[in-house]
View 1 (cartoon, one colour):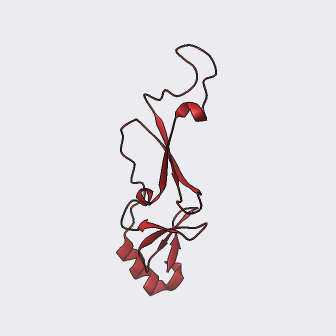
View 2 (view 1 turned 180 degrees about the horizontal axis):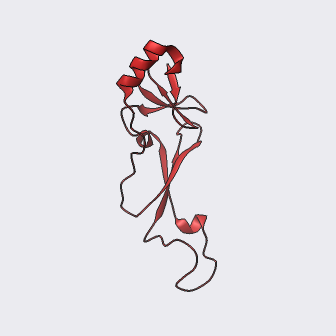
Length: 113
C-alpha cells in the first residue's frame, strides 16, 4: 500500500511510514514531518554562491540573512529536499497528508487512490 508523494518520497499506508523511493528506507512516521527522519546539512550560502567581487555587495547571499538546509536519506544519501531559510527559522512542514482518508480511498479504489 505505497503511494508516491514526491519524486523521491513515498508513503507506505499500511505501516504509515515515509519511505525513500530510491532505497526503500523507512524514514519516520507518515504522521510526522518527513524532514525529521532525514540527515540534515546546513549549508553556508557562500559554498553554493561564492562571492564574485570584493566589497560589501558581492552577489553572494549573506549568511546572516539566509541559510540553505539540505535533507538527505540516511540510508542512500539521496537529496530529498532543500530549502532556504533565515537563520534560526524552524524547518518548514511542507507536506501534511490526511493519512486516514488516503487509506480509506486506497482500500475502496485499490491502487488508484
